[in-house]
Amino acid sequence: MDINKKEVEVKRKNIKSFVTHPKYGNEPLVTNYKLSQEEREYLNLYFEKDSYFPNTVIVADLNKQNCLYGLRLYVDVKVKCRDCHRSFIFFAQQQQYWFETLKFWIDSCCIRCYDCRQKRREIKEWQKLYNRLVLKENKSKDELKALKKVALELLQIGVIRDIKKINSIEEV
Image 1: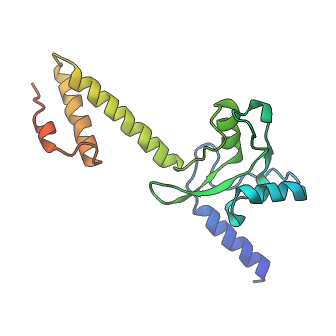
Image 2: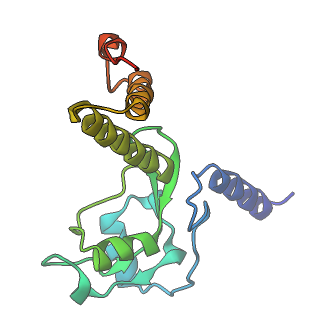
Image 3: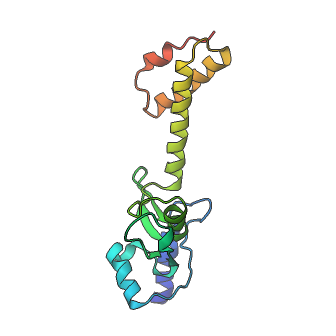
C-alpha cells in the first residue's frame, strides 16, 4: 500500500469518528470552491491549521450577517463537544444558517454536538413540565404520575438532587 492510500484510509477512519448530524452526516461537505491565496490566509487567521476543511467553502453574504465586520467565508470546522468530548463537524451550511438566517452574532460557535444539543433541549422541556406540574394546584392522577416520572428523570441526570422531593409526590 503506498502512502497516498494510507493517508486516505487514515482520513476516512478519522471522519467516521465524527458525531453524525441527521441533516449533514459525519463527513465534510465538499464544494470544490477554489480558494485564492488571500482567502487561505484569511481562513488561517480564524482557524487552527488542521481544524477546518479547506475544500468545503461557502461564500458568505455579508449583508445578511448581524455584525459590523462579518465573516467572508464559511467552512466545515472540526470541533470537540463541550459535554461528551466527541469530535463533530460544524458545517459551513449550518454556519450560514446561524449567521444569515437566525442572525446569531458572528463570534458564536457551535460548542456541542447535535446529540448533546438535543439532550439539553429535552432536559429543558422536562424542567418546564416539572415546574408547570409542581405549581399546578389540584393535580389529576395522570398529572401526578407524569410529575413523578419527570422528577425521576431529572433525578437520574442530576438536575434534582434531593430524593425527598420525589418521595413527597403523592400519587392518588
